[in-house]
Structures are given as C-alpha cells and as structure tokens.
Length: 523
Image (cartoon, rainbow, N blue to C red; front, side, top):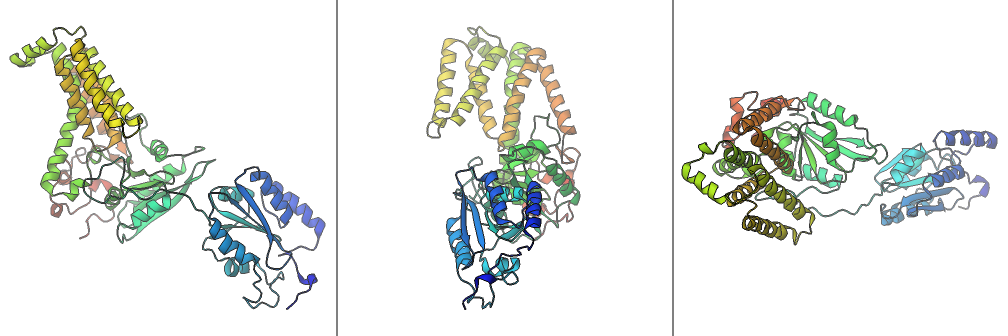
C-alpha cells in the first residue's frame, strides 16, 4: 500500500515548534535527552564525537523520513550483531511483516513496538541522560537515537577480546581442576556456576570507580552465609571512593580492617575451587571485572597455609604436607635471627664441636653476624625479584645461577661464612613452601625485623619479637572474625582442620566462627 507523505510523522512529534525548542534547550542543559533528534545528536557528538574510534551511523527507519542514528565504539562492539540484528531490522520495510496498516504513524511506530517487535537483540534498556549514554557506549554498548523519542535505547553489543580459560599462573595445581579465573567477569561468574548446581548462590553486582566505572560482584550462598557479614562487606564496598579501581588489590586494601598491619586480611586467589570451598564454609567472594584474582573474606592465618590439594589427597599425606608448611613458616621467619643471636650473644648454647666448626669458618670474615646476614638476605631478595621481572625463559635460570655464583663468590672472598650460605638457602626454600604469596611477602619483611631484634638483644630480642607478633595477631580481626581462630579464641572442635587435617567423615560441621545459618555440611 502506497502511503501519502502527509501521514509520515516523527514518533511523538509535538505540534508547537517554539515550545519544543525552548524545552529542548532546557533539557539539554540539564543533561537530559529531548525529543529533538538534531539537538540530541549534536550534544552527543560534542561529548564523545572527538574520539576517533566512536562511530555515528545515521539512517532512516524503514521507508520513511524518520531519522535514527546508532553510536558504537570500534573494537568494543560486535559489528556483526549490529548489522544483522539492529541495522537490518530497522532499515527493512516491516509493514508487511507485522501486517500494520499504518506502521509509520505515531500511534503505530511506538516505543514499545520498536523495543519488543523490531529489535531482535536480547539486552535492550532505555536511558534518559547523556552521561548514562556516554558511559554505556564507551564500554561497548550501542546507542540508538530515534527522532521524536526523549530517550535513547542502549543495546547490548559488547564484544571484548579475552583470553581462554587456562591453568592458574600464580597457584600451581598438583591435583584438582586446572581452570583459573580470567579477566572477564562473566567468565568468572560462569566458572562459579559451572562448579555444580549450587542452590541459592547469589551474585550481587556493584559499580566501583567514579571516573572509570567497573562492575564488581559479591558472591555468597544465601542458606549458609551470615547476613551480618553480607551487610558489612556491602557497606565497605559502597564506601569505596576512587577514580579508578584497576585491580582487586585496590579493593582488598580499601575494605580490610587494619591497613597498618603487615598481615593480609583478605585472601586472593585465581582458583575457582578455592572460592567454592570458601563459600561452602560461609565466606564471601569478591570478583572484579578486569582481573583474574578473586578475593575471599573473612580470612584466618590458618587459611593462608592451606591448599585445596590438602583435601583432594587422603588425610595422612594432607596432614603431613600441612605440618611441613608450619615448620617452613618458623624457619623462614626465625632462622637468620637465631643465627645472629647465637653467634653474637649466646655461643655457649651451641654444641662445642659445632661452635668450633662455625668459629673456624668465620675466622676470616671481617663483618659482624648482622652485616653478614643482611648482605646475603638482601642479595637473595634482589635475585628473587629480578627472577620475577625477567622474561620467563631466563628468569628461573638467572635466579638459580645468580644465587650459586654470589654465594660461592662471597665465601671465596671471605665476606660470609659457609654456614650462613646454608642458612640463607634454607630460609629461601622455606619461604617458597608457603602457598599464599601475600603471606610470604609479609614473612620476608618481618624476617629483617627479627634479625635487627636479635642483633640488639640476642635471644631476648627474638622472644620479644615473637611476643609482639603474637599479641598483634591475637588482636587482629578480619570482618569481625579473629585472625588466629580457631586457636584464639580456643575451639578444640575446630582443630580438626588446623594443623592436622582429619578425615572428611569427621568434619561434619562448618566453622563456628562464621556464624552460619546452617552449621552442618550437607551429605
């Protein structure tokens, strides 16, 4: 049916042009869209049109003179989706397809008709402010402006290039799933959903960052988690006030209880199985778009020394490996300090034959024990950092070869004693046995403090240092949960999963410190 030009109208076109012009100027000045297509397009171009990757594509709807324009960003938006499901749908003559007698009239070509019958795309929303449009378009969505409408359609066409799901890089997987989180938030949430049919798994979304907005998801299981914990975490997230949150480490530092403490109070991980296990205990997980590291809260000191492999293996090897980790923590923190204390203050406590041997090896060393130990420890730390920053093919080789060369050269030059090289090597190896990298850094820093205390007061200084660290850990909390729990406060029933990992059949209850709704593990 041939239509007369007099019946072709804009959607919702007003009759009073002067009133419309004044209204348009007012609403544009208040960052709101108007029903004037030309004015809307000019304002949007003024806001983001200077960007070379922002594209404006104007066209006519169907076979009418109703103007429309799509706005998208090159590289962030899916062009195939735009062409097939937006441009084709809007530019085709859909009068015969939908059997409309007057499809292009104001009453027929309505907002709901465009949204529910013409656009064949799943994610469609309406925005009324220019600020909302720019935010959506610059993150990959496509904006659709239509003449006569005082709002804009935002169409979900985001297509980001992400890497495939691979094995976690920062956490070695001995046994268990070899899938790690990626930089895509949707991939990470799908990994959580894909760990089984988890009932009542809630994923609550927030936006963080004032200028560069990013999506953040808090994950928890409704039937298990303490509601007070959820409220506290959400409260702290809402208080985050920064221009940009590039990585979950920012979130970790902004929500922790005591930012002056050297100990991490939020656990970070790349492993979905670790996150699922934490959720089943009544904890929460925080996932940020753009980073593969998820956060787990609250956390205890014992959690930092546990690994998912402890539960995948039988309880006897799991207990043995966990016990070795606790020994590694003690060796990593106190071995150099004890060496300094015995050599400088308490040589009489060393067995006679060993004392004579040590004195013989140190006869040509011109430095006191503290300077000797500091030299080797600082050299090892520099080598460790250099090995991390170098390209992967040569990083590990440089660290091993550099350590051997420096240690041998230092002994040959008479700068350090051979016994100290053994102690430093033992300390470095022990620090590698700690599964959580952030806790390893903390112990490496505190090792230097312990060495200084030993150099000043000997064994008394080491004991005072130990008491100071212990008192700090006793007072430290992570989201109202005691950091040393279940050791302090004392809960013997929960020691089944502390140093000793008891058989799974004996661990029927969730940790009491989490105040979960359901204290019993199902199955």
